[in-house]
Length: 162
Image (cartoon, rainbow, N blue to C red; front, side, top):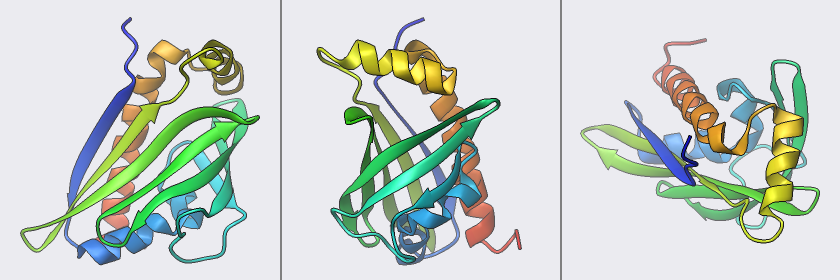
């Protein structure tokens, strides 16, 4: 299977861009939407600012792992992104773009695999051991996760889920 280094998914949400941004940038809420993220610690409630660091606690079936994250972009109503690392090694860039559109917001979640270079193979091996997912299949797991995350975000922000 060909390895994909970047993917993205989008959903239209009937809510203003600043509202959708605030929900996503409050990373402590990510465990409510993501099928892999169970909790986020180390950052106060509310939208995280550039430079904010946090720990993500993740689970997929029997696999449990944590990641270190740092916010790299925080432009209210426009874009929110953070870099993920493990044991000091770069893993991924996750981000969200927000575009006001027809009385709501088009939210695009994107992912870029940063497991490249000399240590990329080792980081990929760690990923397989801790997450149970081969590097060449990570994009498939992430695409499914993005669709679930965006779907849950949409339901929450459109007040269809308590």
